[in-house]
Length: 177
Ligand SMILES: C[S@@+](CC[C@H](N)C(=O)[O-])C[C@H]1O[C@@H](n2cnc3c(N)ncnc32)[C@H](O)[C@@H]1O
Image (cartoon, rainbow, N blue to C red):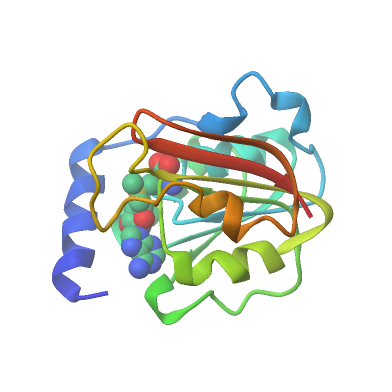
C-alpha cells in the first residue's frame, strides 16, 4: 500500500475516534454460531470493535490492520474493556501475515482483496467459521473496489457455505471449514 493510502486510513480512524465492541454485522441474529473459546483472527480490523467484542466473548484474538491509528484505537478499547488482543500491524497487499496455524473464527469485514481469499479459506480450522463481508456490485453501481456477482460464493465454494447474501451494494458469506 502506498504511504499516502495508509495515512488516509490513519486520518479516517483518528477522525472516527474510539470504537465500540460489536459482533460482525453478518452474525447479528446468529450469535449462536460464534464460538466462545479458541482462536479468532480479525483481518483488516480497523478500530478493533469486532476484535474486542470477540475477546470479551472469550476468544484468543489476533487482529491485523495496516493502520497504526486503527490499531491504537483498538488497543485503547481493549484496555477499556479489560481484554487482551494481539494487534498486528501489517500491509495485506504483501500477503497474509505470517501467523501460526488455523483459527476457530476468521472475520474479514468490509475489506476486499480477492488475492487473499485462498489464504482466508486456509486459515479456517476444520469446523471453524469464516465470516466475510465486502462491498458488492449487486444492487449498486460497479467499481473496482466492489465484488462481482457471485464472487464470494465462487471463492469459498470449497468450504461448507452456511449463508450467502448479495444486495444493496453489500455481500457476505458465512462458511464452515
Ligand atoms: C472499511 S475498514 C473496515 C474495518 C473493520 N473491519 C470494520 O468492519 O469496521 C477497512 C480497513 O482495512 C484496512 N486496510 C486497508 N488496506 C489494507 C491493507 N493493504 N492491509 C491491511 N489493512 C488494510 C484499513 O486500515 C481499514 O481499517
